[in-house]
Image 1 (spheres, rainbow, N blue to C red):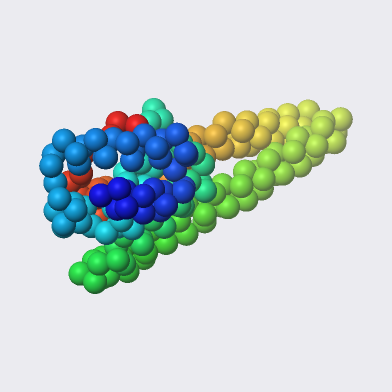
Image 2 (image 1 turned 180 degrees about the vertical axis):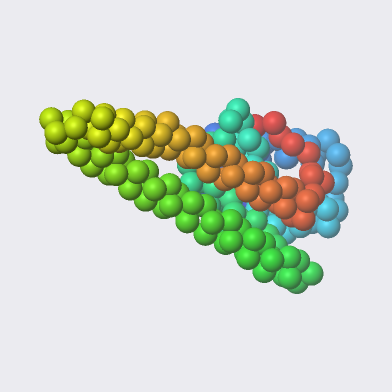
Length: 203
């Protein structure tokens, strides 16, 4: 069993060292208390690499879920979790069709999010530019026609204010979409890979 856990440990390098040791210590005590043989452990938890992958998916999923609003750890950590789940799906021939569908869904969502973010920046910059032009136009014609000057300046201020007001809301909505996507990713990991068949070490 020690050799099995040592190999699991060697495949947990993405997890911080302290948490890694706590995980291994927890399962060492659990296996000893349960009286499971090595064959039973392999049958229930898989090979050391498979078990390590499940532990990493569980660890990063739970860590990401600690934030109150949105996933923590930044895009790099979230992409790592997606990659781990993909590896877990492709590891089983039965789940390969699901893995391909998972790639299409996540790729589509990420593409849509990228398009939305780019669109938000383009729209905001365009509206701000129009607003500034309108303000300058209003100031320039103010001496010739007070009504026209106030109209142009007012329209420009409205456009500028709208861009400043709505941009954060749109970005917040985009973050929410990413949050929903990551919840779906974690559900796939729990449902088809970890299956919650092993005890949580509560790290």
